[in-house]
Image (cartoon, rainbow, N blue to C red):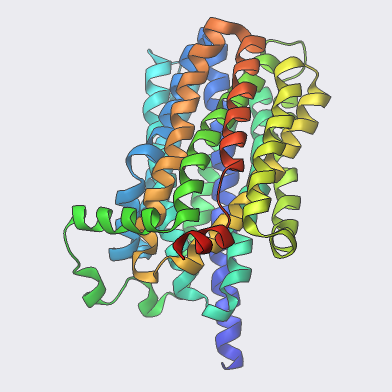
Amino acid sequence: MSEPRIIRIDRDFALLWSGNAASLVGFYGVRLAYPLLVLSVTHSPALAGWVGFAVMLPSLVFQIPAGIAADYGNRRRNLLLCQSGGLAATCLAIAVVMFELPNPAMLLMITAFVEGTSYVFFEASELAAIRDIVDVEHRRVALAFFEAEQPVALVVGRATGAAAYGVAQWLPFAMNAVSYVFCRETLQSIQWGSAEQPPRSERTGPGVWKLIRDGAQIIWTEPFLRTTTVIGGLSNLVIQVGLLLIMVELERGEGATWTIGIVLGAAGVGGIIGSAVASKLVKRFGRTTVYRSALWAWTALLLPISLSSNPVVLAVCWFGVGGVGVMTNVLLTIFRVEVIPEKTLGRTIGTLSMVTDGSAAIGTLLAGYLLSGFGTTGTGVLLTCAMFVIAVSGSRMTTPAQQRRVRR
């Protein structure tokens, strides 16, 4: 490979990564601001759960269409349209707050849904775009950076989003709008060439249902993919309940609003560390052992969260939850990219995400009603028990060596 080509790849990937990282910072900021705003206006955890559900519902509905669009569409155009749609939605949210429009909860559910949709389609096309602009030998490093952008954005987005919300309720949405504009500029600066969309022969594929069936079949026939998809969906549901529990607990307390951002942002700090040690742990102990250990670690960390309202305790435990979460994400992302055929990567990841992220959306909605019915302590005990059952189930997961012995 020539020197100019290496430089160009570095430049293009840096633009893609930095633009999306900035957009994620803004997005995570408003994901925190949406339920806080509804809690402030209505004092209803159930309605806060609904607006959280609205921002995550696209993860349940649109993951497979987003994967198909990434596999067969013009990826540059997809990414730019996603940023434009998110920008329009967050500008409407600013208007809702600043001009005190009627039915604010309903309007914020709509804008949250549009932003969530933009995020889902963007994420699917970004993963395919990394494959386009980064050579095979550099993809492991690129994918590690791809996973690292989530915890980095989580730290900065939640901290700045909560701090901005404390200054003015519209400010997190204004910062989000700026991040969308910046991301659009970086995308337009990338030298896409012919890599912005697949060759015509790859774009004229079979029908939608055949595409969905192909992605699901790949997951079903690979035992580790199949098991971790189901367990990942259930654990994401539980973790999402814990997230809203912490927000309600701190919002009702005497602390400043920015405390919420610090506590929830701790997960991002943990995630940065988790992304750094993931590959070393997998190499030493194996992916199945690391995954099982992660489930038990989540169970242990959720117990103090269910019993304490101390911000320090919550921050330390949520730090661990985030670290374990990103560690497993790196483990699973590398495995998925290695075993899933490139031509089906987008829609297969979409099928996986429909289960894992869609479960998180359901968890957000469920959390509002659990908190309304059982309070924070009762809800915390329920989610800890649920995570314990999931960890026990994960411990029964067969290892690759056991799978080979069964086949014999």
